[in-house]
Length: 326
Image (cartoon, rainbow, N blue to C red):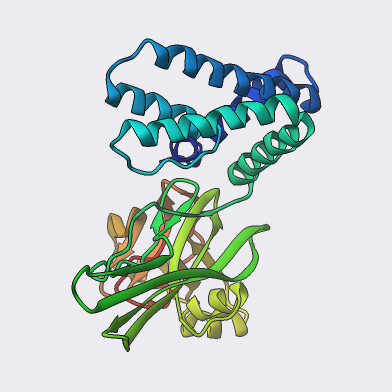
C-alpha cells in the first residue's frame, strides 16, 4: 500500500482539507487564499449535513452521515446507538460552525495546521501507528513494511476482561540518521505483560528503516544498538569487514556482499541464472562454494557487474529468523 492511500483512508477529513488547499493552489491561489477558501468549505459542508439530515428518518443513515462530517471537521466519534447521543454530536457541530463564523483567524490556524500535518506525513514521516486495539492476548510488536511507510502496532494497555492479565505495548524512535543521503530511523517496539499486578516479562526488538536504491527497507537489528550507524556496522559480516580492511574490492546489493577473490573464472564450475536469495539472481553461481560472477540482478536494486573476476558471496549478519530486507 502507498502512504498517500493509507493517509487518505485513515485521516479522511484532514486529507480532504489538504487536497482542497492543494487544488486551489494549483488554480493559482496563494496558500493563504487557499486556506481562507478551505475555511468556507468546512462551513458549507456542515450546512449541507444539517440540510441532508432533516430529510432522513433512518437512524443508521443519520449516523453514517454524522461520522463522515465529523471526520472532516476532526471530531472523534465513538460508538453510539441512540438519538440522544446523535443530538449531542449535532450540538458539537453547531458549536464548530459558530467558531468558523466568529473566530475566523483561529479557524484559519486550525486549517493551516491540518494542511501542514498532512504535508509532513506525506513527505517526511515514515513511521505510523496502526489502529489495532491491544488486549492481554495480543503480543504483536513487529512492524509491517509497506511501499513507502512502516506501520507499527499502536501503543497502549489492554486487559483480559475478568482475567488478571494485563499487557502494555510501546514503541519509540531511538535514533535518526542517514543512509545513502536519505533519512533513516532506528526504533524499538516492545510489550510488557503482568498478572494480578505482578510483572511477568517483556519482549522488545529494535529495527532500522531507511532507503536503499530508491526503495524503503525494514530490518531487525541488535537490541543493544544505539544509533543508525552502529546498527549498519553490526549487520556487516566479519569476513567483509576484514576484506575491506585489507583493501579488497567489495560490492553490495541489498543485504548481499560480494568480495573479490583470486580465483579464475574458468577454474570454477558455475550454474547459470541462479537465484541466490529473494530475487537476487546471479548469471553464474556455485552453490557449494558460494561464488559468483557475471551480472547480479534484482528488481529493486541496481545491476552489479562481476564479470572482472570471481566473487565470494556473503549476506548481512542475521539478527533473528525475521526476514531482513533484500
